[in-house]
Image 1 (cartoon, rainbow, N blue to C red):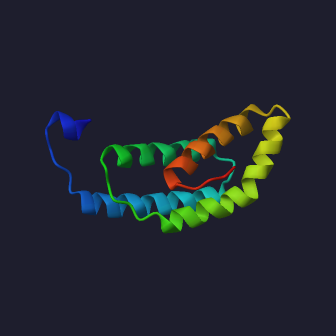
Image 2 (cartoon, rainbow, N blue to C red):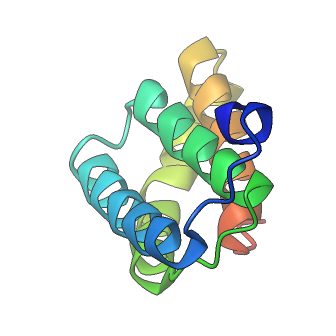
Length: 107
């Protein structure tokens, strides 16, 4: 919003590099804290912002982390959500949105 307000053109290559690095680090942290919905939300919001800025991201490492997390945690969270766990339902919603950003099919 501030970039638009002040009509500033961001240095997209540098921002893309730094955003990619940060997303990788956050995905690694999510691997250590797989139930952390706030962390999922933060990653999704960061990807929303980078998409709005049309940054070129290098997500291969984050995508690999996401893929392994999907294999390990998605079935667990789906089962919990099916049993009525609201946090698991929120986790699934955020994870599915993150999958769209990562361009990974989880269904």
